[in-house]
Image (cartoon, helix red, strand yellow):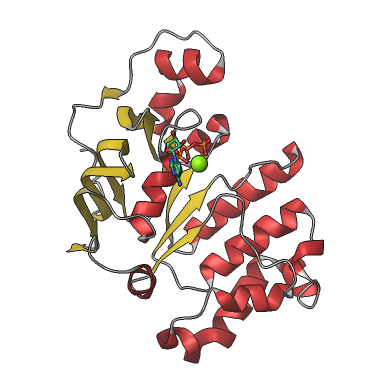
Length: 258
Ligand SMILES: Nc1ncnc2c1ncn2[C@@H]1O[C@H](COP(=O)(O)OP(=O)(O)OP(=O)(O)O)[C@@H](O)[C@H]1O
Ligand SMILES: [Mg+2]
């Protein structure tokens, strides 16, 4: 018997987003199962960041539903979404460079409901990233690129996420640090956090994830189990420079996982 698919923590149904008169998402539907890593891959300008920003609530969709743990959150402002245990680690990290590492981490714990657990959560983050503990009084702007990404991940974890949205966590990092960041991604999942990952490093993204969606010009064009996508001809040719002939993945018109 095949293993049962875990319940979805997040479902997007027919999501459309525009910037002014320019529509960039055209009916995105996807599903993220609890306890999994799901990735969205695709070229520059495909709409990956726009999708994450719509989920966290900084962009308002013109159409569609965003269902988090069974409830439509599309009408909620971002701070209320964070209270529902969803956090975004944004593209480019967006740390406060003139503030200490610890103060940056504390910014992730701003909802009042989290305050009684701040000290406990901070210890949890320092347990996962000992280097941040060593450098907790250092200004975030003086951290190395890899350390800044750790700090951004740690800040996201301070919001006690059930679902963590990661936008390009390895962008601009040397290969050895890319390796380290993806090891942290795997580690975070072991702590029971579900991850929706956007990554330009498609090889790594498909290796660390369970399921993937390929987004091109605001549409999901392909989806499937990540190991299948790794061997898919379109993914190989368009993104990995290979030429394996193996269908494997489903066209986007198939029902989403979940
Ligand atoms: N604030 C904005 N105003 C107008 N257009 C925007 C804005 N932000 C993004 N866009 C456009 O929306 C489209 C999708 O952008 P988005 O940033 O979501 O792509 P992406 O898949 O994350 O790309 P990348 O891999 O380069 O990060 C692009 O055509 C982009 O130019
Ligand atoms: Mg982006």
